Length: 75
Image 1 (cartoon, helix red, strand yellow):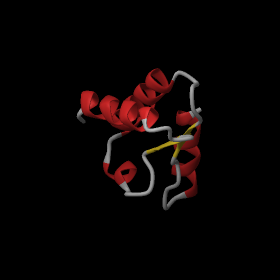
Image 2 (cartoon, rainbow, N blue to C red; image 1 turned 30 degrees about the vertical axis):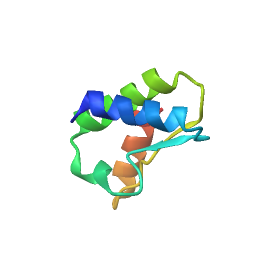
Image 3 (spheres, rainbow, N blue to C red; image 1 turned 90 degrees about the vertical axis):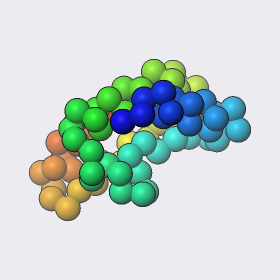
């Protein structure tokens, strides 16, 4: 993953005045990443938003048990 590019994207969004960020959301990238990659993106988003804006993490999966695992991971 491009960690610096992800950080820059977050900064751009916050500078533009977004009211919240959804990580691993709508385009399906969460399904194609490893557990380690997903966790790292969540960590980076938390570091960069620092509570300034709401942060949501997409945790849905085709299997309920994986959705629960991802939700616990996001917490």
